[in-house]
Length: 242
Ligand SMILES: [Zn+2]
Ligand SMILES: [Zn+2]
Ligand SMILES: [Zn+2]
Image (cartoon, rainbow, N blue to C red; front, side, top):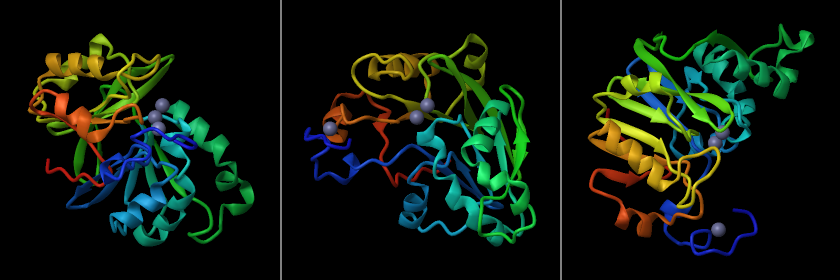
């Protein structure tokens, strides 16, 4: 947190050094990135990821979106616009926030100058396919917004959520790995706090859970020490098999 002197912001534990939330899914046919954070470029350089073949968006908030300009390099690598899987409200916001990328005069520009994307509409409960994989969007409530979680096989990524609608619970059955929003100890109007996230874990009973979207109110080591078995603090650079 800019201007903060708390023990987490001053921590020397690299796991307390957090950029904004995103996950990369590496499939045999290519890489699917979920969300393009303001640090996307830094994250991809750090992890030595050379190609992104498709992008899916949970929602349009700046902490999940504002790295999209750096996606202008990907069409060169994959030979065409990047497929972007999102809801209508997310597409509308992307078109406004990155209006220069959709201007008439850039239409025939070669790749590399502005992000070139092909929007693909997705919706909750309707499976879609990309890179040879079936992906199920899950409706999640994020304060007064609706966002999407994504389930790929037995893994689900559910960030920016403070309530799970009744219709979404069946889509979380039989999970091996759940990646779940847990912002801080105190309740928050748009994110699960730790206790609320643990209640979700109780109900879903995944084999393992990783908390994400963690704020500086939660130090990695001291929080990990009080979490039940099978529940972990995620951290930048964490790699999971699924
Ligand atoms: Zn702090
Ligand atoms: Zn958000
Ligand atoms: Zn967020």
